[in-house]
Structures are given as structure tokens and as C-alpha cells.
Image (cartoon, rainbow, N blue to C red; front, side, top):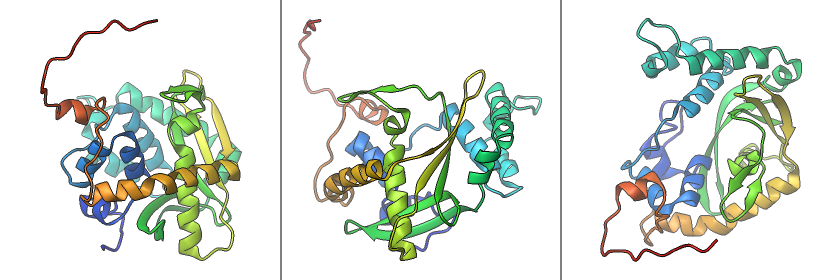
Amino acid sequence: MISLTNENYHTTTANNDYWSVSLFKEFDRCEASGLAMVRGEYEREKTTSLLVGSYVDAYFTGDKGALGRFGLEHPEIFKKDGSLKADYVKAEELIEVVKNQPLMMEYLKGENQVIMSAELFDVPWKIKIDVHGGNRIVDLKTVKDFEPLYKEGFGRVSWIEYWGYDIQGAIYQKIEQIASGRTEPLPFYIVAVTKEKVPDVAVIQIPQHVLDTALKMVEYKIDRFDLVKHGDIDPNRCGKCDYCKRTKKLAEPMVYEIEEA
């Protein structure tokens, strides 16, 4: 099992050795795509939305050279004349919005990009905390807006639940507690800014009962996911994600059926 660093944290080797929030959520979406990611056979597309969030994150890492390195790693954020494309000009605006909010800046104080690992539910996990504030765990989010979203099988849910930030908070909180030897978990906060024409802002504490419920869901699912990850059982295919469509093999014609309203 490798010793985790900033350089190897996102590698295939690290994903083979450890579970992470992003890997768990990928398996939860589709076991087949999750397994392909572990094996280095598939990588989710780095969308503009994700890159904008990463750009904002890079600024608030406390590392003055982070944005420069981000630009070198992602030249697609620039126009031919070297200026930022519109989406990243917007990201610069969002950075200024956050900087002008004293409460947000207060909650972004602390140790940045803290890597921790521990065993939970009999499997090893890795986490990278945006901000460890000493007495709290904080994650910075850049989102479209704060409106509820439709989640299949659940109906309209909060954006926090839709994007699995409750799961993230639950795992971060528990791994930090185990790794630090705390008797009580630290509270988990989200510092969020929206990409709307007029950005909205929020500092949100996710209640402990919500985190506890999310952690129970992780406990319920992780045994099967880990068996799939290590090749002990075959993965289920969702049939809808890009990976499933890309690897789809037709066996027979399907019968057209009219869906009832």
C-alpha cells in the first residue's frame, strides 16, 4: 500500500490501494464504470464545469503558484491570444466574490489540502480535506445554483444531496476522526458560491444526523463495492453512463414499446 502524497493521490495505484469519496460515488452511479476507473481503463471527462471549480479551488489552496501550475496543466482554459476564456473569467469573478465575504474567508482559514487515510468498514480510505480549520472540516464548492435537483428514484432533492456532498462530509469527518484519534468528530461545513449572473454565497454546516445517515448508506454498500473492485464478483452496469454506452454490445433487437403517460 503506497504512502499518499499530492503527486500520487489521484493515481491508479492509489485508487487500487484505497477507497475515496469520488471512487465510492462512481461505484454508486455505476459499478462497471467504477471498476474501469480503478483499472485505469476509463476516466470521466473533465468538463468545463469541473475545471472552473478546480480553478477556484487552486486559488484558495494557499499556494501562490497553484494557479500558474493549473494553467500549465490545462492550456485549454486560454484563448489563442493567451487570455482566459469566458468561463474562467467568471471563475476570477467568483474568487473575488468569496474574497469579499469575511465569513467565507474566516472559514477558509486553516491547513489546506490535508491528506489523511484510515480504515473504515474494514477497507482503507483516503481523503484530501480542502481546509482543516483545527476545530472544523471545510470544503469549498462552486455550483450552478442552490436550487433543488431531480434525482432518479428520489424526486427533487437538495443540491447537497444530489451531488453527494453529504456522503463526502460523512467520510471526511469519520476518517479525520479515526486518523486523529478524536473521541468526537469535527463538524463539516461547505463554503459555496454559485456561477449565476449574480453569484450567490453560503456557509453551510451539514447537521450531524444527515452525516450519520449518509455514513450508514456507505456502510451498507461498501462490502459489495469492494468485492467488485477486487474482482470477486462481476459489476452491475447502469446502461446509461458514457462508459456503459461506449462498451455496449448488442445481442438482439429490442421491441419498441409505447410508454404510458
